Amino acid sequence: MAIVSAGLAPLPTTPAASGVLETLAFLRDRDFAQARFERYGDVFGTTLLGQRTVFIRGERAIADLFAQGDAVEGWWPASVRNLLGPLSLANRNGADHKARRRVVGQLFATVALKRYSPAIVALVDELRQEVQQATAPLALVPKLRRFAFSVIATTVLGLDPVDREALFGDFEIWCGGLFALPFALPGSPYRRALQARKRLLARLGAVLEKAQTAAAAGMPLNAGGLDLLAGGLDEAGLPLADDDVAEQLLLLLFAGYETTASSLSCLLLSLLQHPNELAWLHEELAGLPWPPPPGEAVAAYDALRAPRLDAVVKEVMRLTPPVGGFFRRSRQPLALAGVLVPADRVVQVSISASHRHGTGDNDLELFRPQRHLAGEPAVTMLPFGGGERVCLGKALAELEVRLLTVGLLKHLTLELEPGQDLTLATIPSPSPKQGLLVRPQRSANLAAAVAVP
Image 1 (tube, helix red, strand yellow):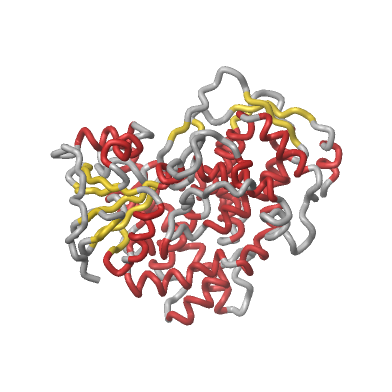
Image 2 (cartoon, rainbow, N blue to C red):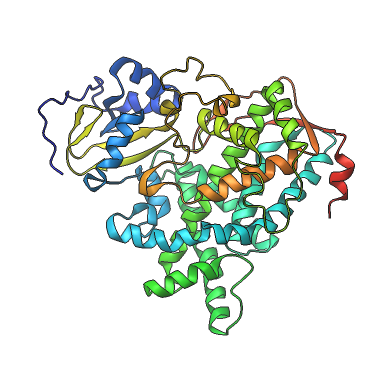
């Protein structure tokens, strides 16, 4: 669709030239975009390391972007592109992207989530028992990251604990380099991530080869969801052991792991920092069953059955979305909120800024989950990105968050260790810098929790 520039405002642009200082500010300042939105408006341009970039926020600008889908394509920083790989779904566009997304999306469909739920419930119980046995302050963030990885590695790949552990260390190294500067200097996070990527792809290739052999012998692929993936691949004419598929699994591990670990950490941090809201949630948790009835885990704690839990999850996602923003590249000129954006610009949708920007609310910086039950004016909510490239792991992440919140907090009382740094590291996803140190306290329902098989 051709854009007629008449009546459109020119793009407000910062005075950045090379973009070096802007890039440093972008990496260090959590409020980088917010400060510039306040100065330039909801659409502004700048330069980040030589890349002309446009930041947008708000319902109108984002709706305009989605309405012009044919004029944009997916884009990621060089470090992400290289670490995901050239075959990855994230680096594909057009019909090729849509076809492969349909195939791999089966791993996160409702039928798949129902299959995964018993394993997730068991992992929640395992984590709760580990936490409640701690006799000293315990860092929750590493535990939550391992839990989130165990879920995706167990449910999708069907890995046993030994193989899971072998994969986890390299995956953490790989995640640490995703948004690093793409310079492969010896010992740098990016260089270490590239090396970890090779080891990860080799391990994933072995998993796929094993599954291929089992399928050829007429045996079940594994305890995970690879058979769901295999059916779609057969229809697309792709072999299960193809290098292409290994790169898709690497993306899926990230989609089903990093966003979930961030969401779990931020939810527990928010509740522990706001005891009144935690008590308000506990009133509802007292009436919810754990474990969920067989076959009902996917819907057991949804908005209809657990509205307060739903409101808490939404508020955490609003204030600390697991994805701070997502990118598109303009292939043609765009009209965004009345502003003309030229072709060949990277457009970053600022999710965090959009979640804190709206009409009718003057307390959007506050943690107040009750707002989602009161019929107040809604803000633009895109915690997992949006459009045709919304995070594939969204449904699994939301299910894990709900199951873990009920399974952990219903029978376990946690207290923040005083004196710790609770500020958030934001890359690759928000997470308490010092690991979220807590002390478990025995609750009235602990005996019942221990008795659950």
